[in-house]
Image (cartoon, rainbow, N blue to C red; front, side, top):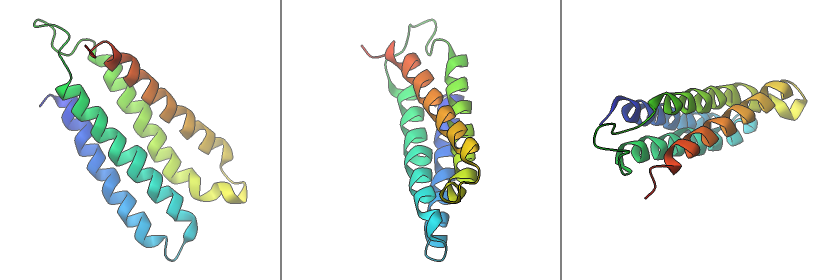
Length: 125
């Protein structure tokens, strides 16, 4: 398994643990429930899908198996910067605190998904 695939998969399990922990805490702090759901869906599931698809989708060529991996690392950085920013900001948006940070997190997540989609599109044969 290539390094970037392992990076996505390992990061996905970090978000799974964070999401489950936040879900437990949401019994006492209800504003954490949406954060736990987003941590699991955009953190665990999305990172797992990106990592496995990077690893398993058809290769670019025999000489250059994965193509331009810089865009994959960029998508990893954008997605997970957005995920961590969302974990920090989302509990406070209901009180109009940190709304700009929340919008930034959504933008980073979108750009991370977009860059990975642009990369993987070429490998869908």
